[in-house]
Length: 318
Image (cartoon, rainbow, N blue to C red):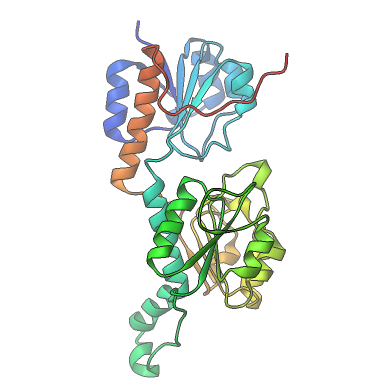
């Protein structure tokens, strides 16, 4: 009998075909009554596949007594109940590294679009305002400006590398200093006071909720730009909207929002916000690599081999 795999959220077609060839798949993602479906198939499930936006809950862990691995096609795992997985002996894997370049590229895309007012420029051409009103207002150059990275991990470092190529100075904040040639600030507020641009690249979850505070956004000021490719929860979103509306913050480039896929409707009214639908890793090449890493993690588990990309789990209380 093949191992039984629960599909909480599907992979790309090529990787789904690999799973179908190797395992018996149970499609929770297609079930009309998910609770009834989980109660029916849960006792036989050996592994589960999900994505970061969907996650894996304690209730699901409890409904899958045989499950020993949950593999998510995402670098983030803030919606996976790691404590529940640890308590039930379920390993968790994610897909780091393979999406680093695309996410970093998107951060710079959003930064350039916000600084050079790309949406306004396109509208200036499309509406005929160029011919009627002449040139659009002047915008902000990046060269010589300081980019502050909140969370200098793999993605944060890749963003810094790209920004340096644009002639920007780099600074960062985090839990502790790193061995890098950048100025370190202990808090986002201190960082924002010295930066022209802040990019949030920290992990999501309760520990980083509201990490980029109202005070940090205010410190950026009316010429400052905030870019978020992390999680919507990392910033005080209400303050972000208010400061963009009032002009106390210059602009924002946002790939993530607190309420996805239905972000606060105030965002669509903001001409100084560039909006993107949590699609930083959304290239064919990267999503295929992410999907393949999920397949590889599950295959390694069933082969009794070390997992390629395990997520550290909290210790279970004795």
